[in-house]
Image (cartoon, rainbow, N blue to C red; front, side, top):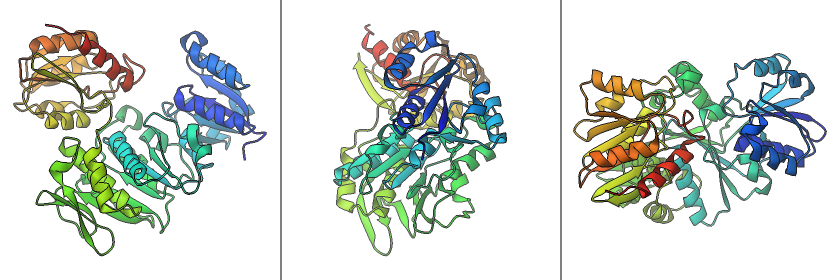
Length: 452
């Protein structure tokens, strides 16, 4: 399929490097490109030089290489409006995401999971359930392990659980999951997608190629998802924590029930779910629906829910110092995710927030403080915007800092025994860090260094 073709791979983060190595193994000729110069990504360049034969275009956009390429694989971070992408599309060349590339080679059925918030937790939980059921399961995608990194290992009897971002879904063509999940759609990435309507349409691309034999799982409590007029033939199942459903998964008298087909089954009680917060209840309901549709039994689902510890960087308990409990929620890259983390806190909380400006409105975040958030520590590109929004809503206990280390120290000094310190930035990390994972690791290291 790709042997002898010339591929232009643009963006040399994890997914780009993985895509380039995969294509080289399949006999493609490679041109690889990144806007960063060689001295900015020396380890990546060394890795590629040691692994494959390729032409490098670094420190600039690869406009001159478009004519020589048969197709392009672009990083999720590259907007489709970029000049070289427009040029390629106008010339009729395929511009695909790394996920689309992997799909063309995937033999295993795919469970695709997207949504503004909860993707990583749900993807991890679904993967855990299938693993516990004895399935050879690959958990890949936006979660951190590129789909292309493992796709050639996948067999027809395996399961691929793929986390998908809106950036990845922009550049799919034939991608077709056996089962697709949209957890929620709330304001995010408007600096890229411009409008909520466009953002919602991009999320819906996850099920555009599904057939009558495939499944779509949606959140009945989400205003956008519950009002969708679905045009595709996929079989739709909902989950809800607020109302009883005819089919799907729901909460009734603090018990979780599911009905796939005719029989109603009890899974477990709400308080038996191992991860805290109403948002994680929704993630659990979605996971139960997925597992039920794929034939996993209620007892195994229940035991998996009880044992699942959650994921790193998502309301992760870091330490308790002098009665102050620290939580790392670096994965909260938009206001809605941070609101959910605040709601999950038990007791007075000092919030650390701020990061890259994605043109989000932080009013709802401040309104969610209620009596729970007692102090706000801000940093990053949006520090001033968040602080000004807080002042407008009458919240004045605000402290501006210039680093995660300083933010952790200031928050610690503000906290009393019984308080929480919550890093839940409500913003992306790219103004100060390579990704949310690095931000979370630096925060955890800073907490370890704290002493009264």
